[in-house]
Image (cartoon, rainbow, N blue to C red; front, side, top):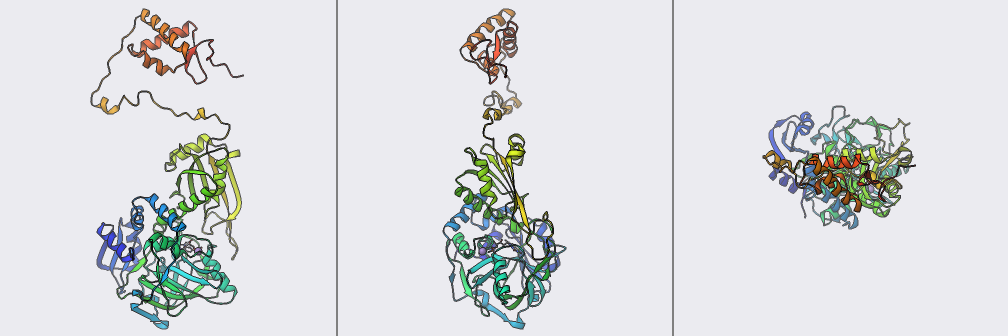
Amino acid sequence: MTESFRGFLDRLRQAGELVDLHQPVDIRHIATLVDQAETALYFHNVIGYKMPVVSGIIRSRERAIMSMGCETYREIEDKLKNALDHPIPPKMVETSPTREVTLVGDDANLYDLPIPMCSVFDGGPVITAGIVIARDPELGLNSGIYRFLVKEKGLTGIDVVTPNNMRLFADRAFKAGKPLPISISIGNHPFEIMGSGYRAPLGVDEMGIAGGMRGEPVELAQCQTIDLPYIADSEIVIEAEILPTGWTWPEGRFGEFTRLMGGLHWNPLVRVKAISHRKDAVYYALHMPWENTWLAAPTRYAAIRQALRTAGVQVKDINVTLGGCAFWHAVISIKKQAGEGKNALLAALSVMDLKHVVVVDDDIDVFNANDVEWAIATRVQGDRDIMVITEARGKPLDPSLLPMPQGVVPTTAKVGIDATISEGIPKERFERISYAYADTAKIGDYLKGKGDTPGKNGTEADVKALSEKILELIAKLPVYYTDIAEHFKEYDFGTVARALGYLHTTEKLWQDERGKMCVRGSEFAAKLPK
Ligand SMILES: Cc1cc2nc3c(=O)[nH]c(=O)nc-3n(C[C@H](O)[C@H](O)[C@H](O)COP(=O)(O)O)c2cc1C
Ligand SMILES: [Mn+2]
């Protein structure tokens, strides 16, 4: 098999990105310790539990890159794109180390698992890294990650407030009055986390995407009490069913990807039927919000690029910003043809949960917030460049949405800002300030003592002679003041300035449309706008 969960932990350890803590630690301290740590943490001795806890394994950009076997963040997106284009379906295997210890029915006890709380206002311990596999009789298999708040030794909720495929499966079972069996795999490689976090269309099983990321099938094994597979390499698997209780039980609150505490959710209940784990299993506590963020962004990148490809827009760069929680905001630079600022917005706003999209020209650095704001400041007219779409599919976790009655999923507004240079606006207006001699006059040399050779300080006679030469030069073609100063560098700048001043005085000097110096009354001379 390509890299396993444990293989990844070892690699983190070797790279100094995972630190082992062997002293006794109170489970109530885990979340804040992980929050403060620069590295992932492995708690070998959690007071009152036999099982160790690992957390924070993809909590940094660097570790997210490492986890995908990539060198750069951008490569993650390429890898995901490849997996989306070439998914590899999972395969069933007979043996799985997860079954070394198997507890069924009353023996299955969630209190034996070291499930920490995450944030202060959480409604209890939360399973955060459970990869859920479910089957709908007509729609097939589906995988995703959803949080489970522990209520009793064999009872949790499942947080499916967002209108995703899992919610649809649960809703269909609920309407049929039946429980929906689910397997919950815990302790898996980030390939599987990323695959199941990808919001694939209905009917596409995300384990195939995880396989595509791996370059080989994800191995699945059969559960014992329900007819469903789980990830064969998992540390722990919980076999359970979503009860047909509907969205009636209070659950949460949860710390969300928004970096905020979500409100109280209303969710279905989940009954645990069996728990299996490796003899020496480690419990993976995925730490919100940053362990969610780093691998979420590339899924947006891949989806945006695909939408823009379909729209026929040439993309230079995309930034799914951290300020937008890696979810709601994208800044996209394009090589624009007429009208494509708006086309790009239409395509990008259809992607996942994107809410605000800014499209800029390809001279703007999408990773530089100042540059982007500058494009908005200098290229946008609000009445023609901002589009607002109302009542699109929203994300209930968006704290800016108005509260809704139970069961009503709120919709959202989507906003596009076309910060490309508009059609019909002269491009010359966007000529940037630059400085003469930038290639030759280097501050480093001057700080080390370099000096310039003085040019001649001309007499009045020199000034008049020079003005004749300048007139000759600009009669042929207008040139910038800087170029005149450079052309006659045997004189100092003051002499050249005086010569040009003399041409002004004698009413021979004018400027062309671009501001270059030319002969007054010549064909080049700019005319006062009417
Ligand atoms: C760490 C993590 C935690 C998540 N928690 C939840 C959750 O509690 N509820 C939820 O609806 N989605 C949650 N998600 C997002 C879903 O897993 C994701 O949107 C998935 O693509 C949904 O797939 P589906 O449309 O197949 O159901 C979480 C994702 C990650 C990576
Ligand atoms: Mn899905």
